[in-house]
Length: 480
Image 1 (tube, one colour):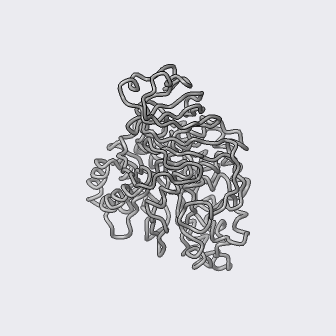
Image 2 (tube, rainbow, N blue to C red):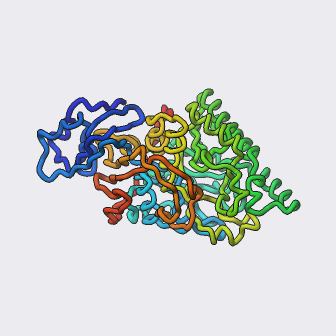
């Protein structure tokens, strides 16, 4: 659907306008152009020709001047871990901290995970995590998670779906903690298919990783600096092929998180060509960083799964994205600090995996792929706003600036330059993997639910008004 602003939307004539974002270039996935955005009651009321609203402006309407700026839908981050416990470690942020960092980076919706510990009930964990949404400065949705199939799981999945949780995370690695076997994956896929949901899956073949790590230990190469070699590309590619076969066998949709190799993306693209509803997510650090980080002074800071790949693989992944084979870009935000990672940096098998990135996802991708890489602005919005909303049952409430959508906006200065330093960020950690990077483009003003929350590096509104977003059923014709 095109959202060309030809006149004041009829809704705007009967609803009071609280806020006008004036003079900017609105960028949606499917249209961009000069337009003023009319906002009332937390919703977008209309897009109008620049200046068209002045003649009927009501007293008390607030204006934001976006001249020379891009007006983007607030970002939707499809992959965030907030207060996440894995092994002996829990990441350091709560909903307040994670969403504060998110809005400073232009993201106004996060999708978190409710991942059960051994012995926990998936539906109970989802209910507890869902209740935390109210502490956020922006809205959040939720992925459930199933580790092991039993007779209670179908009803738990139905219960979660009734609470608006229709995407369920599964892992093919981390044996003894979150890893699910193939029959469990097939059963969950089939059940979710009939509920209008979808499996969201982390693919790394655990048996290949275990063997590689055992050989690494024998060779004295199991510390953080050797991380890339302990989780080879082959493990990811083999697991993706197997999961695609399961999804194809039961005609179920499947979404692959943080794909890091060109071969994995190609496997998904070929399956999609056969009619499988299969989708690729990449994350910012796999598109921007490479395994040379493991030779640096703090290799432990870059331990994530899958690991950072070599420069050739990163270039191949970027090329697949520019070819249109990637559906979304997430952050895979995990807010551990240096002390947590250093405490077991001698053995990657015991380390907390993950990088902090919810605040830097949009600026880093804008700078590296739009400014330097030639990614069209509409495609940027599609990858970081619209498609994450679509694939999580949130579109068009989120991910687009259009009448009736939530008034979540990022007013972007495309020429602003900044050097990334952890001390100037808002994530609950002492480092960023992008320390010292020169970035062009940054959100200056961020509007959440019609309220300016961030402006010129300042938090204007610290009141938590976050809502748990109920995801709608995913369309069987969904294409991203």
